[in-house]
Image (spheres, rainbow, N blue to C red):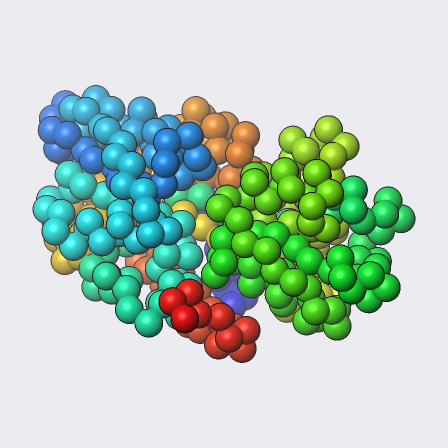
Length: 331
């Protein structure tokens, strides 16, 4: 899949998932599985967990007699994916994961407990989202663009820093790439999640934060921080007044991330197709679409083949980027 085709797919997937051609959730009078386990590698209450619970509600009583969410937090999402290696390949256990665990982790860890291409089987895209770059009260109100921010950083090098939700995350690398493009050495401060980083930013402890757009919206609305840029090729519907990086001359900073559903490796095609059909229907329901939008996420779905192609393309795209930055999570 070319970069153009992939970008177009990402930006239209949310709309496509809601088309009337999608099947009804009520697959048949007979449940495909008795109990469906939807595994997430993150704690209750977060974005990944909330997405899983919305989808579980939609599948409960239709695809499965009951659908439950299991939180297998730890190791930055690795534990949940590793669980797929021993899970039955019968459609009763699936994992929902952010793309980073599959497209970036192989480039920043010398050894992973799983292979992203053989230990999991793509089922469907779940949602897409873009990233934003925001500044807090440490940065003067006169700074209204990325170029303004770079100029301020050059004049105040000791305060030239930014936070991200984790070292080795897409927001981390976006911040580094932005600094390089602006000729600024931005010091990275890693946090455990975007909200802790934002709280330090609005408290004046750090200058800026790179993170998912949806994490900033409530704070921007309250006047506590300012979004300077977003990372997709077009403006975010969650921040339509904020120009993209590309609009501000940073044309290489066009990135979106996605969450996807995966089955254990070597799951038979008929089971993958059956699960895909149920998930696509669930992801098109109003409660799921509206619930994700509150978090700044665009509900989306795909065929298993499309998700597999996206994973391969993103994995290959991030390899050279990570190498150029020189980051290793286990060094």
